[in-house]
Structures are given as structure tokens and as C-alpha cells.
Image 1 (cartoon, rainbow, N blue to C red):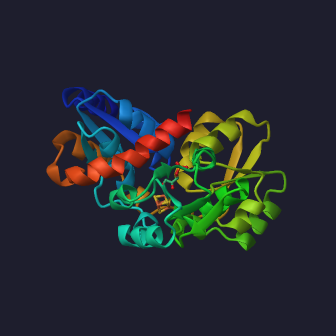
Image 2: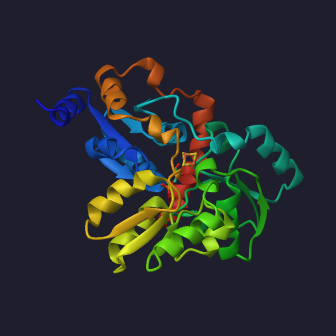
Length: 304
Ligand code: 13P
Ligand code: SF4
């Protein structure tokens, strides 16, 4: 029996579904039951019927799965894989801003801790942020933690008044204007597709800005032959698989999220085989109660 068949058998025996993000290694994406961007993964997690979810992604993704489907046991392929941006906002900071701006809606990017979600009115992902924030009745929006995504959304919704937090993704922040200029010089015919976690100067120079799934969709549907991709390089696996005749280039080789890269095929297989407690997402009942509301609100507004 080869590895893929062994994993497939284990999934059945353990009644487990494997969900993976586009940033994890191609080998892990290959054995997953579902691969998606943060929004698609949240929607999928809410509806799976298996007893266990094994998440190949970072901790906020596993937490969101647990919040949206608390009856399931959620295990992480590597429980130490976190998101540094999620840790740039605390529940205490959100409480203080709420006191200062009582009329503001607290909108939290899904890349946040369960404790921050518990203090928020609604969650968003990069693929639904403009739509969801646009539907909020409040004029003032406190957007936490990503300052770059917040500015991207604020530009699209000039009727809203934004209060920014100072969080950012270290991986996307690394992608600078000079590097992009060099990449454009090297590949003059290429379109630039960027994730909204990139800084404003990168987004201004891009032909298209979208979530990982939206970047994939754009590349699939566009006739251009070459693309410069400003997001984590894990996405190249699907881009190249879906478009074997097209060429994709990173802006810089360092577009790598160290936490996403902790997730290996070996670890995923080992967690699946043992479903160990130390890899399980465990959240207090009170946190689950409060933190699931903004996620459910996101699904409601994004789907309406
Ligand atoms: P999306 O897949 O939703 O575009 O998110 C990117 C990301 O940073 C996940 O950590
Ligand atoms: Fe967090 Fe950035 Fe890694 Fe996404 S790519 S998990 S935002 S550190």
C-alpha cells in the first residue's frame, strides 16, 4: 500500500476529514480532502459530517473550525504552527478601543485569536472583507489586526470611517517595492497578482488583488502567460497544477510563512494515525459561545 492509500484508509478508519490551506506544502495539499482559502475552509469546516477534523494550517484556522463546528474534535497537523499577525492584537486592546469608540463596529480579520474574536462584532477574510464591512450598519469601523487589509478595504469603502490597528503579516510585509520593480523588469509581460496582506505600495503596483482562492481563479481565467505572484509560495503548487502552460514567479524567494511550512506530510500522517490530545484544539465553553458569533455573522453577511 502506498502512502496515499495508507492515509486514505486511516481517514476512513478514524472518521477524519483533512482540511488544508493553499500555503502548506504541495504534498500535504495532495492528500487533503479539501484545500481552500480561509473563507472556503471556514465554510467547509462548518458543514463537515466526519467525527474529526485534521487541520493542515495554522492555529487560528483550527480554532475557527472548532468554533463553527464545536461538536467535532479538531486536531492540528502541528499545534505549534501559529500566525504572528494573529498575536499582534489582544482582547484587552480591543476592549480599550471599544471604550474609546463605543459606536464603532469591531471587525476582526479571521487571522486573530479566539479571544479577540470573542470581543468582535464580525469576522472577515480577505475574500469577503469588502462585502461584509460594506454591510455593517455602523459608519465607524475598528479593523483588527491587519493594517494592510484594513487600508485596502477602507479605500474601497470611502463612506466608512476606519480606526486602524498596527498588525501585519511578516511574510507579506517582506515584499517590497524595489523587489517588485526588479521582478517586473525581469518579466515585463507578466501580470502582478497580490494578496491584500501586502503593503499599499505593492497593491498600487498590482494588476489584481485578491485572496489565495481569488488569485487562483484570476490566473485560471486570464489568458496572460506569465504572472508575478505576491503571496506565500505554497499557492504555486495549485497555480502550476491548474495551469501547466503558464509561468508563475515570486517577487522574492522569501515569500515563505515559517509556520505554514512546519506542516509536513509526515506530521500530518502521524497525527492522523494517533489523534493525540496534545494536537487537539481545546477552547473554553465561554470562549466558544462568544467567539463563534462573529464567525457566524460573517457567513451570514458574506452569503447574503
Ligand atoms: P486567504 O487564504 O484567505 O487568502 O488567507 C491568507 C492567509 O494569510 C492565511 O494565513
Ligand atoms: Fe499569518 Fe502571514 Fe503566515 Fe498567513 S502567511 S499564517 S498571515 S504569518
